[in-house]
Structure formats: structure tokens, C-alpha cells
Image (tube, rainbow, N blue to C red; front, top):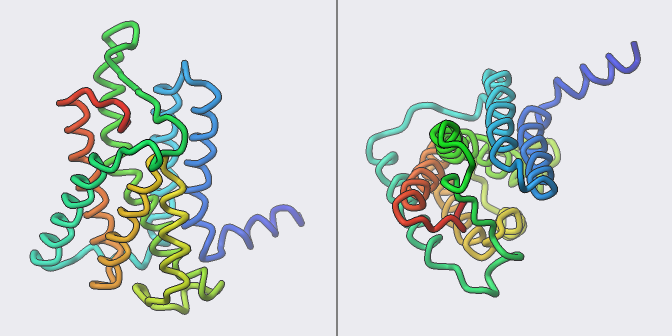
Length: 224
């Protein structure tokens, strides 16, 4: 009973539904690093699992206002395109953590799994990841840095401390760490500009979707 009580208390905290999807995602990232031969299967399971967790908690994400003006959506999309352009050009050796994996789905044995792998890669990067990361980084973490009871801090509240810490840690989450820092700066600025997580999700989704199309068109698999 004590375990169930503690679980219920944890489950009902404000931070849990915002941090848990990210934690599960990162656990799968660790698994991918240990089991490179099964990276595509793990990615599919990761996408489905994290997507279902987000879906389960959807009513708890009250900060996601699903409405925005066409002007704001346009601005978010433009920022997403700018981040994409910078992302594919910030590829200097010193700007990378290790060597990015070249995950080429065309190298998989058996073409019958090619299209499901590509579908889940695009769906995961362009839908699941933007929702999961924006809820974690720019809804929860950036506010939690300044006030652990983060829901008392209005969305888009600027402090230099939370800006620097969140941007640096967001960058360190990516093998292209400098590009990640740059992306974090732009997404943060969008948050400060409109106080709207939904717009950050749109911008992030635009970046990742165009990046996916670019990878498929150019075979620059290092970005996957």
C-alpha cells in the first residue's frame, strides 16, 4: 500500500508527466548505443512507447495552447527552417560529441522493413520528439531551474540563468552539440517572443521534418 501511495503521489505531481517521456526516451538512446545492430528496431519501439506515454498524459499538458495566429505559425515555421539550415552546416569536428552514427536504412537486410523503418524514423523525429522535447525543455526544465514549483512561473519567463543552463544542456543532448545549442537558442527565443509551447513544437517539427527529407534526398545519414 505504501508503494502504491508513493506511486500515486509521484504520478500526480506536475513534473512527472513532463519529465517521464524524456527519461524513457533517453533510456532507449542508451540502449541504442549498446545494441547498434538493433538500432532501427529500438527506434521503432522508442517512438511507439514515448508516443503512447505522451498520449496518455495529453490532458495534463495544459500549457499547450493548440491555437495560434497564422502569423505566429509562419514565424515558427521560418525559425524551424533557419535552424535546419544552420544544423546541416555546423558539422565541424570540434562541434561534435564523438562520431555521429550513419544510420542508413537502405543497408538493412530485407527491403520489406525499409519503409516501416523510414516511416517511424520520420514520425518519431518530426512528431514525437518535438512534443516530448519541448514539453520537457521549454515547459518544464527552463521554469524548474528558477523555481522547483515550476507551474507558478509563467511560460516564457526570461532569466539569464535558466536561458544559459537550458540551452547548454539541450545542446549536450545531441551529438552535434554546437548545432543543438544553436537550436536551443532559437526555440527559446520563440518561447520568449510568444509564450507559446505549441509554436515551439511547430518550429521544432518543421526543423526535424525538413531534415528527414534532406537526409533521404542526399544520403547524409550522419544526421540520422
